[in-house]
Length: 166
Image 1 (tube, rainbow, N blue to C red):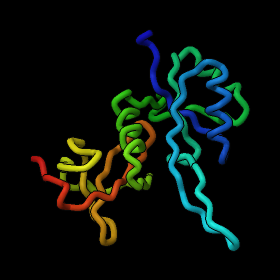
Image 2 (image 1 turned 45 degrees about the horizontal axis):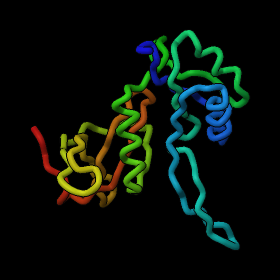
Image 3 (image 1 turned 180 degrees about the horizontal axis):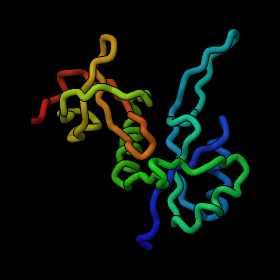
């Protein structure tokens, strides 16, 4: 089954959970990274689960079966780059899972960020991960690039836990 790859599916707004559920019911392996967000209404606060990458989820399937996944209500299209279907490597999926499992606060950013210093995390739940350090406002962020969807995951890591690597 080596012809299975992670493809990037774009969904209608706020339909990620429903689409993921329908695809699972069809027997497909789906990864929908979720984060918890505290929402403030005028009368109350509530924690809500939302998709980490707005409008995106990952589907592990064979290229020949992409059409089938698009038949699910809420599925819009598979993401393309330079005429090819965008795919995400298993390592990148595992990186996203590992970051989310730690519960650290994560932001996503689709803008191009200037190349920063390459760093390794020295301590804490993400110890050993390598990426890039950028300064945004007063905080240092550790960036993991997910090239398959042109997104960056930014995790705020104290500078003392970052070691510059050459």
